[in-house]
Amino acid sequence: MRPLLSGLVAGVLTAGLLSAPIGTSAAFAGTTVPGAPADNPVDIVEVPISFAVKNTNRTTVPCASDGKDYTVRGVVIGPRETVAGGRAATLYLHAVTWTSEYFHLDIPGHNYARSLAALGHVSIAVDRLGYGTSDKPAGLATCFGSEADVAGQMVDALKSGDYEVAGRTAAPFEKVFLGGSSVGGMIANITAFSFHNIDGLINQGFGDFAASPYAAEEVFQATASCFQGGDSGALKDYVHFAKDSLDTFYFQTASAEVRKRVPAPAPDPCGQIESVTAGIGNDVLRLGEIDVPVLLVFGTRDAVFPPPAILQQELRYFGSPEVTRAGIPGASHFPILEEHVDLMLGASAQWLDNRVK
Image 1 (cartoon, rainbow, N blue to C red):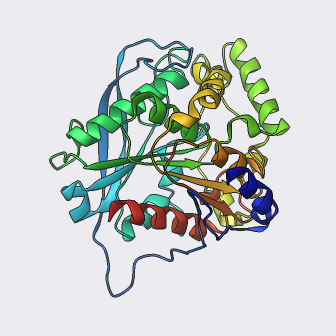
Image 2: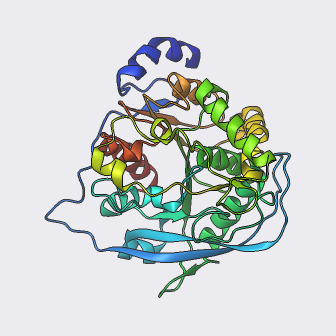
């Protein structure tokens, strides 16, 4: 059924959203999320969260890490009673150039985590090691194998309650989903098939071997800078990815206001940049080992993984009991920034609703 599916709907995907489930694959039908109903406001809490982790690499991705103890920090956002109750949460991993702010933007209509909270869902957005408020190992001391290991440790911590949350007792969550944007999606994949400790996977725009020539050139340029010790003005062995083409990387239909208010890009650890190929190779070999439901969310004008990347990726999750795909019309590699962010939110909310209730 899956090869037939690819031929039938590849052209439809580039025009917008798919609508008919075939076999074990479901397609998002286009529900929008304007926010919580006015007559039923949700009491949303946003509190700091932190995890004590070891920067180890117990995955099969061949890359090096320093094995030291660090702290990963972020924010938990959700309805007060749901955060306290610990029924389900989704841990989100950001892309290169970003921090946890991508999922928690201070831009009206584009705060992904807060919008999902208004609909009853708990999101945990963290700054990955080397970014934002989290600890920063040496630039060559962390890689995508260790990032997946750290993500697996955080999932275990959320299920056991072994984490710190400001002003309240940490609650164990019965279910933990793992989501990632771009390379955050690759990290989520590696975590899923390495540790089998998550209840579902959200891949926002990572397509493995479907990368465009533009993406390959940007990785080449960043790697070349890493060989020179990193960029000036950044920590040693840290670089700025896509520093000369951020508009191509970030935007297609984003408004002028969004473009103006997007945070400055964060520098990236060279150990991660240099392990992209190793991470992709491992992902390609083992993606079929993922045995939980998967949601794929890709922009239809993504400069990094353009159509039909979402279909190519979907077909390779053959071990998953259900794969749901959402193509966001006109969106870039980062649909949260774009005009149809409501469709992305709708896809995520609908998928989570079906797995939490």
